[in-house]
Length: 209
Image 1 (tube, helix red, strand yellow):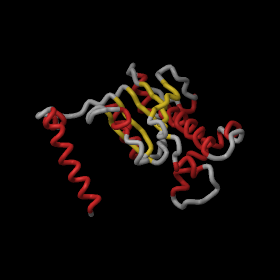
Image 2 (image 1 turned 30 degrees about the horizontal axis):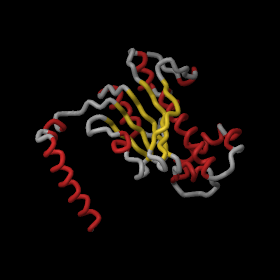
Image 3 (image 1 turned 90 degrees about the vertical axis):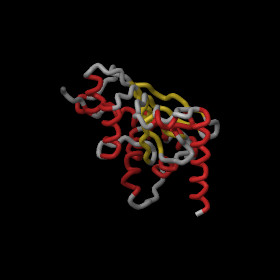
């Protein structure tokens, strides 16, 4: 219980700190949100999106799952994506992986982890598609980190296969998709890819509006 109580105490201190700087801070926050960014990241507790980017509450809409996957059958993520793009009108979607990702590392082993195998299968598919490159890298941290990068790029491309993103582009929206990776050893973010409305979408994934 002490751990939980610590969180409540820290919350009170945080509230006081914000009020001292701006007495109307929470009144302004309660009026609504107009985030510029949608962050799709890993659930890893060491990768807090607001903290590592310096964003304030209200600037970033956030969705997180194991290994930052964009899967068309994930209704939770698809709902977040639709709300962020259609209603909040975000301008940037950031897919952010991180080096040393446990989910990515697990996908490179033959071990069965139970029900999580179904989730990790999506990363295994990325590994399989890029195995010619991965097998040239010594098994271990370097191979895992390269798969982290390849997985992040793949998930960014998966976003372009959604009707949500394609419709926004069809309507002339300036919507950008960014693939980043976070290096916990340095605290720095690395840009991997940026995708805009000119990105070529495979015919089988194209929607008509």
